[in-house]
Length: 372
Image (tube, rainbow, N blue to C red; front, side):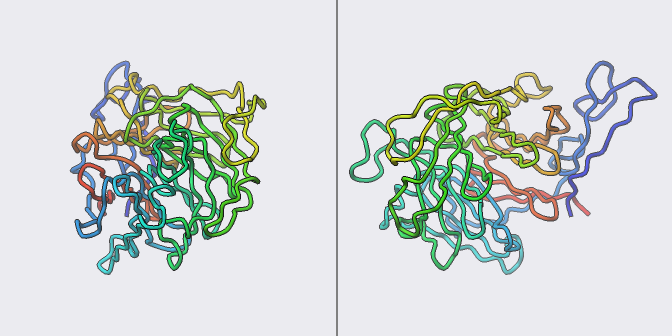
């Protein structure tokens, strides 16, 4: 069973600090060990790593993993390459079952086009962010401005990944690279096209297979202040304790923190494909919480992001590392996996504290746990 509890390094008597390898040095800030990241050893050999997937499961460039609330061991995985979701029931157990859900004949190439991330929301629902800016259905504008997040039923008796199983869709955020749930039917999206964090309020969904989007609300924060990295997700975390939004700015190698409460209403956004309320939100405080270039080991391309017990976990698929930070941006620990570039994407933690990560390069899902 893994533990997320930190191991504090006491240097009060010696005045010395802990260096990159966990040894005491002069002048370096002390690291706080996280067992799930190797407890300052940074060594994968100190963890148990299990590949829980097989080629028969049909993973195709997996980008995110999330456990379905209220259903123990049910893990959902988005696949960017073939517009699908694989659901694992009893994930990691001997009786594990994999279900691949894909519907190219019911416009799945629009509603689930190149999914970069998913987030479970109000009971019975979840939403996906589509990393797409092309024409995905007849009538889409040719300028690539149409795509946006999709709201779905999470009922496995209904969900197919196509038009008839979607509950709502709002637009104007092409190349969406991350998503997290706030409350009710409200989500935060990393909008790669506009370099923004955008708050989507689906409000009352239009029902399965509907088309009425007029009651939605779209608010775009930090317009133009974030980067976009092709084919790498930029995951998002909403902190319900503070209302801060954390995001992995992959292109710029940093973790940012947005305070939405500091913004003021700005101008309307156009074009308005949904006939709903759409506004820019101006002057919101956006800070660089972590600059990857300032760390003792490089974090060049942060992607996966999870907030667990006050620790912000970040995966870097280019460097093959997973980092842990406190909410002030202080580095607590990191794990060097040695995996090739393009591997580590979205992550999730189970009730036992084990870390599950999508490996896009190997088309696998791995579970990391602390040995007993």
